[in-house]
Length: 149
Image 1 (cartoon, rainbow, N blue to C red):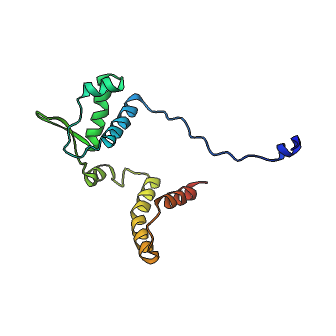
Image 2 (image 1 turned 120 degrees about the vertical axis):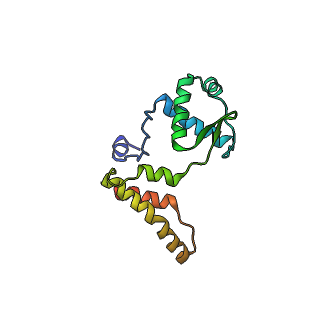
Image 3 (image 1 turned 45 degrees about the vertical axis):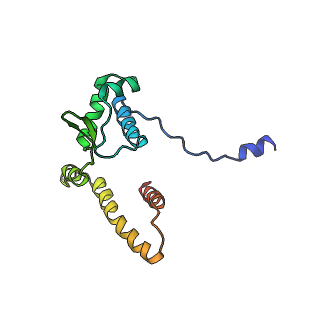
């Protein structure tokens, strides 16, 4: 193929993902959640001590403590006397009620929450009509296409 033909053909590339700009505490928080999943921990299971996590992850105990404090705030872990820290089942509704005050949220967030609330109802209706499971990936790609300028 000649150079002019090559120049006329443009290869379509997939988008390159941006670099993650996460703090060390953010990374540890995510890694702890992965640890819980990888070890099939369920609510009530004890988790290793802060120092064990710090040594395994190669970070200071302060970083681990901050990450665990975030998980405690979310209701994923709690401290128990004589047991140490355990995995808990968060009260999702209570957490939502604490942060979802409509007077504090922007219009875009309110719109996204409304769409999230309406989506399961649409899926249920479409699922009954079509007897097909709802495709979340299809829905999310449709939403993202609508949000693009």
